[in-house]
Image (cartoon, rainbow, N blue to C red; front, side):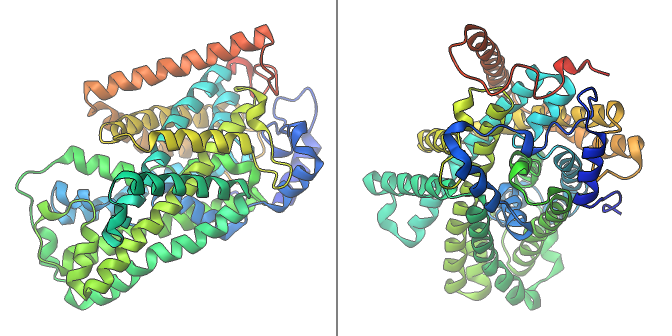
Length: 493
C-alpha cells in the first residue's frame, strides 16, 4: 500500500531532535523552520506565515490546478488517433507517470519540507550547480505556463462577451486578470488555496452534469471511430502536457501544515480527482456524440455538451473553462513564486527575492517578479514554446529522479515520514518507467526544440556563474554561503 512507512509528524519531530548534531550530515536541513526570513518581513510576518499554512483540502485543489484544472485541453488526444486510444491513455498514464511522480514528491517533500522543493533535493544530492540548473529549467516552464492562462481566459470569455475579442479591451482583460491574481497571491497560500477549492468545484460541476446526462446516450462503438491519419506524437504530448507537474507543489512545502501527514493524502486525492476528471468526460462525450476524431480540437467539449444537453450546458462549460484558467494561473503563479523565493532562501539567488510582506508573510518580491514575467509573456505566441517547456520539464524530471535514487542509496538514514515501499528496489522500479517515458518524449522532439532547450540550459549555467561572481564581489546580498543549502558537490558520504 502507498501509505506504508508513514510516521506521525510528532514521531518525526522526535526523530529529528534526537538525531540532531552539528557533525551529522543527516540533519534536517530542509525544514522550513531553518530557512531564513529576511529582516524586512519582521516578526509579524513570521506569525502571519504560521497562520497562512496550507491544510489538506486547499492543498488538494492547488495540486489539481497545477496539473489539470479539469478536462479542458484533452481534446487533441481524441483528434490524434482513436477515441479508445485517448481513453486508454488517460486510464493507464496516471499509473505509469502520475503515481510514481507523486510518490517521489511525497517522500522528498516530507523529508525536506522547505520552499524550493526539487531545488532543495537536487542541491542536497548533487550540489549547488545542479540545484541552480533545475531551478532555472522548472522556473522557465512555470513562467511560460502561467503566461498562457490570461490569454486563454480572454479567449474563452470572447465566446460569452464578444466585446473583449481584441484591441484595448483584450489587453485590459489580460492585464486585469494578471494584476488581480498577483495581488491575491500576496494575501497568502491559505487564501489562494481556498479560492482554488471554489474554482475547482465550479470548473468540474458542468462535467458532472454532462456525464450524468450522457450516460443513457453512450454507445461504446463510437469509441472505435478511427482518424484518417494517426498522430502518435500529438497523443503523447497531449497526455504528457495534461498529466505532468505533480512535483510543482513541492516548491511550497515550507508553507504546508504538518507536511508529514498532509502531503501524501493530498497527492493521492489530487491524482484521483485529476485522472477521473479527464477520463469520465472523455468517455461520456466521445460515446454519446457522433463526431469524427478530426473534429476534436481545443474547445470541442463545449460543442459536445451542447449536442448532449443543449446550449445551456455548452455555455456553462465555456464559463467553466474561463474559471479553470483563473485557477490554473493562480496555482502556477504561486508555485513559480515560491520556487524563486526558495532558491533565494537556499542562497542560489539574491536574498531580496526571499523578502516577506510584513502583513501577510508572503514572498512579495518573488510574487511580483513572477507576475511581471507572466504579464510580459502573455502577449506572445506559445505554439512552439509549449514543446520547449515539455523538453525542459523532461530534463528537470530526469535530474529530480536521479536525486531521489541518490538520496535513497546514500542517505538511507534521512528521516522520512513517508517512504516508497520495497526499499531501494522499489525506488528503482518506481523510476524506471517514468524515466523511459521522459527519454521518449525528448527523443521525438524536433531539432528546433532541442536547440531551444540547449539555449535555456546555457542561460541556466550563465545564471549560476553570474550569481557566483556577484557573491565573490559582494555586490549582492545572499541568504547563505554557496553550498550551505545542500551538500557541496554531492561528495559528502
